[in-house]
Amino acid sequence: MLQKVLSFIQSHHLCQPESRILAAVSGGIDSVVLCEMLHQLKYEFAIAHCNFGLRAEDAEADQLFIKKLAKKYEVPFFTDNFNTRAFAAQEKLSIQMAARTLRYTWFEQVRQQEGYDYIATAHHSNDTTETILLHLTKGTGIAGLHGIPPKNGHIIRPMLSVTKDDIYELVTEKKLIWREDTSNETTKYQRNKIRHEVIPVLKEINPSLEETMQHTAERVGHAEQIVAAYIQNLREQSIKEGEDATYVSLVPLRNATGLPVVLHELLRPFNFSYSVVLELAAALEGISGKQFESPTHTLVKDREQLVITPRNLQQFGSILIQQGDTEVTAGEVYLRIRYADAATYKLNTKPHVAALDAGQLHFPLKLRAWQEGDWFVPLGMNGKKKISDFLIDKKVPANLKARTLVLVSDQSVAWVVGQRPDNRFKVTDKTEQVVEISIERR
Image (cartoon, rainbow, N blue to C red; front, side, top):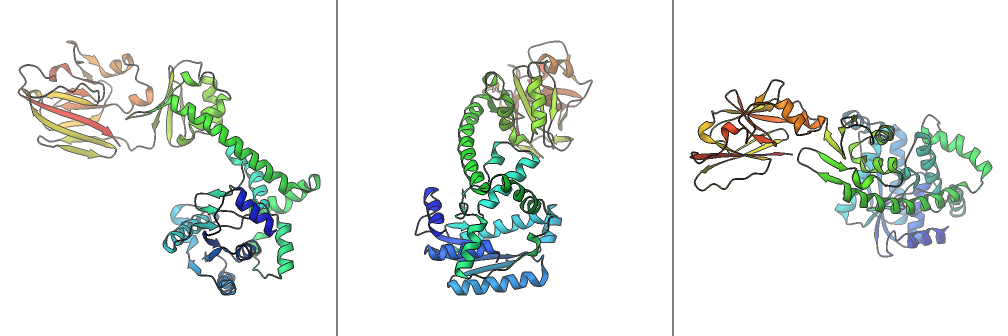
């Protein structure tokens, strides 16, 4: 087993012989064997243990046991107590997820403060099998089939090549003592149900299940890297970040292999489920305007592109701009206002900037969302136009229409923000002072 662990460490470049390692130790059989492995391989290591306050006297006994284990190996011992239930309630997490968050956050703090290179956990090949089966049961993409990665940042898992049977053989040989967590036996937890009820049946079909699953996970991991490179190439060709939205050009995706999977990966940051992506893929050849929702974003198909906007923004009210203001911030909207002498002013024609004749403005100005019935005289025209018609003519996607703002002077729209100023407020050769207003969304 020692040679198996050493070969795995070397082949996956987990750490160097001189690396300082912080071992995550619960007191169970796996983490006790991890300490024995690090000791036999002569690594400089320390032990870190979390008391989650979930098992009353058993938790205190675990803590004391691990303190003695650190003395046995003559290594530093770090421990901390957590109110896991309170943290779970505060963050609206399950107890298991809360404990995981607390555990890894604290381990990283200790690693940095004490100068260790890596955090080692005691995951083994049985854990990989359980993880893959759990993901398959719930539904997953390629990322869910690579199992537990041997290395993730500063976290290493040197025992992924060994099985639970290997671990039992070692503790028998070395007469090691560990603490048993009785919660590992109950099948009320999903992972335990797979461990105790599903895997034994699968091992009747394939006695070498853990080794097979570990090799499969490694092959999937390499395939995932190939797919990731392909997706990244398409991402660079198709995605453009705008001030108000993210735009996905469909042109580079027309001949993409496995389009639904490609779309799902491209849209992953926006939390669109695979079922929604399937609907989207089927609608790509249809008419523009169809809308799709994720928990956090709205997506609209707009001709040869997808337009994605956040949907968790607070309803925009209004902002007043007083004469002399140079900047105004409200939520995600930031305005910069500059006053300039018309004789020396150089006109800025970018759409997020409006140059207006100060003499035609009536302060305070109001920035608000456009409303049905609003109209203005588009720059370069003499007749008025409803803003609703203007946005249709401009082919503004539906989800961006809802975010369109107007700058109002008295009762008149002086600027359809980011689109067009009103002709009545334009800078002319009679203008004495220019008010330049630029907008950013953060």
